[in-house]
Length: 182
Figure 1: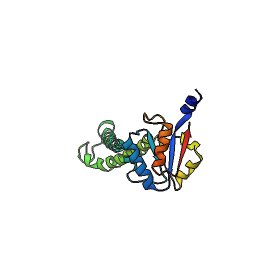
Figure 2: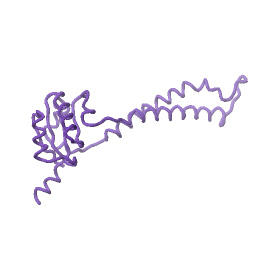
Figure 3: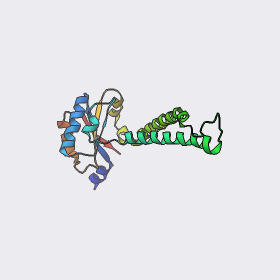
Figure 4: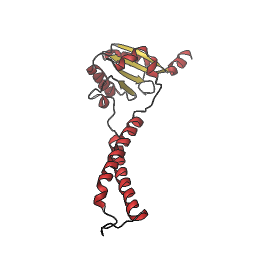
């Protein structure tokens, strides 16, 4: 019973690597072995790491496209409403809906809305702001912002086994494997 309670307090196992290639290779091997609930932490973007841990699809480009389209439609609609419906003013016999004059503001609002969608979408997808995460309990984790690379396999992974996963991470060339408590 004691071990079971202790097991539920365990968030996962964290492997520390000195080189970025080491964490990428370990993540690829872990994914091939069937681990799916894992995450990697690095001080800078490492090419190939998101794909190695199974992050193949990204919804951010669609969010940005949607924001840009909504901004363009909103910008055009705002100008159309102001010049045709709310305050029609015939200047020099031109039509009320003179759409070429709407292009600059429509373009600018499309860019603005796409940028806002990109920032908010990035925060949402990355789960930010996140003031607490169990990996913050590991003293060595402060090196993740300097020069170390970490791979965490979580206990909620169906393939997770404390001893087996520990040995698996050691076999991948991890500098140190640490238990991460909740």
